[in-house]
Length: 384
Image (tube, rainbow, N blue to C red; front, side):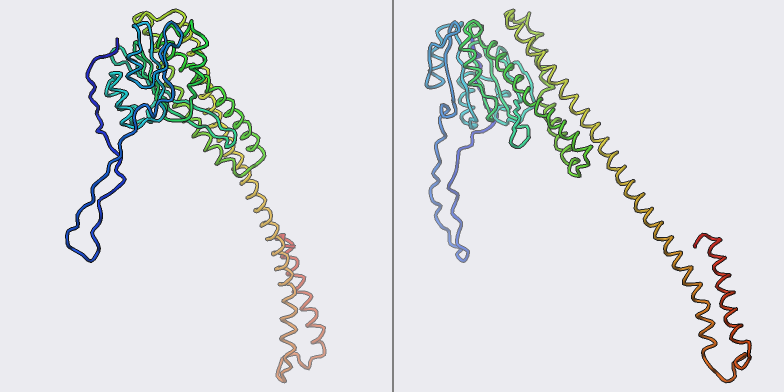
């Protein structure tokens, strides 16, 4: 039987208020009457219900139009109501919680959303938070969704806050398998877990393909690969946050098999889900380690490229310096005879050797001697 405990909502109801108080004119201090505030009536809870059905013996017997009718349609404790809600408002979720007698802490988590995957038991009701994921090929990104599941003795209430996962496929699968569906709410819970875990497989394949592309880009020298490695690492970390808690959740369900007398078929079903979840978690851990190694290799290759560029720049600078030394050496050699010729070309009357007959050969010899001396010095120092 469902919990009869009175429901106490933690969060106050917030009604929509589209009309605000009028603001007084800028130049008038006289009081003005405030127009009446027209409050919009909250949408009924049924507006957020995307599917509802009552099952007995694995077959649908009713399709109720509201939650109260769904509960009244339960003929006995062997029947089950399965209600699916999509992005309900706070008022709608509080109304549903009051109908099913849900614990206020679980309802608060469902209202706030953005919860980490977890499993909580409140009396005879299980509250499960799941993070679904899907790989978007167009953008090569991973899109994460959130799903809350309330699983009681005679009901299953699912609250989706995103497009994924598509629970209509789960409902169709269960309705096509009456033997499994007649096992009750726990069978529905395990089917939802299986759908969420199976939905991780395309994500794993997409991430693997992205990593393969990144490896190619790293060794091809693409300068934009560092940013892509960083973005993909963030996605893998988020994927780990969505998948790793599943192992503890499934372990907790397994620990309660004997206490809650879980059907053997459901036990095998859960073990299969656990195997798949373990594989996904291991792959995600491997992706993160591989991306860390790729980032290290990329940093090494970038450093190696920079070192090669610096070496080439150094060699070019060295070659330039050698050329400058040669030019400087020849300039110095040519400067000596220019200096001597400039001195003896001033033509002053009182200059020494001006009227000497050997002055011209002496000047030429002096030029040759100085140039030869400078050439010998520069040659020994390797400038020439």
